[in-house]
Figure (cartoon, helix red, strand yellow):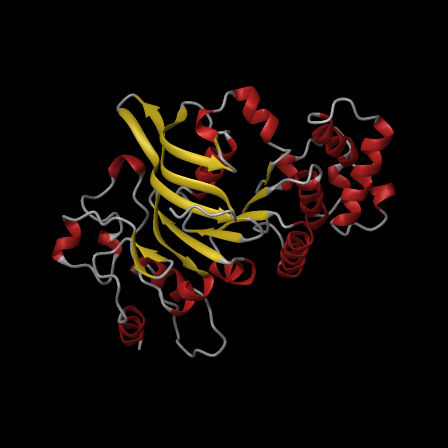
Length: 338
């Protein structure tokens, strides 16, 4: 990957495995990604493709019996895969923070939201006074647009709506001003109106602070509104990586095209949305050749033999397909759906 002063996070050849009675199962297998300061990388793909495991690998939170088997995760010059547990705890929350999918299960129902934000800050600033930490927690609640933050500081999670709880999670993640924020499906459980508010909030905070964001979702429509660059994952690998405009206007992998075809569009009059036949293969039963070829509408005989690498098919546009680069995926898809 290209190295430059704007590069905050660089992932090269990441392989995360889980040890089973039948051997190691790779849930991430050779992932290459880059995140730049002040930019948002969207990670998209079906459930089970490895998106959340990627975030846990970056944060050093892979549950046992999982582990990072090989590869490099470089964060501002530090190789995270080689850091000790205390060193990772020092980074986690302070310079790297994460918003989890469901705030009701991430927040402790037995403590007030203010107490939980304060405890997150106290872990990295043990010498700070209680009054100073409380003032900063109230400021964090105000930053995420929670009305009357001084009063809501003493509320318990069950006293807040889903949207408010998600804002509390964002406030907790931002309380130590991290350089990198990982948002794992942060709007999945929210209605459309609240979802739009949360997405707008993240963009405003990024503009004000300059932090980088990894936004994980299965929804390409959400990615279109927040991301600068997009990585499309399938079966533990990145199948396509490009700017958000290139992903939508010039997809170079059939899987990306299938995801795009499943998005409803007001201007189109098709009776049915396009769909991807079949299901995602489990890590222990991957097909030979290209992992996507059994479900691919454009597969050739060679696809069952060749396992394509992620290669640059256009400037800053990478795809793992033996047909790339092509200009026929979109037109062929439209003919098929007509």
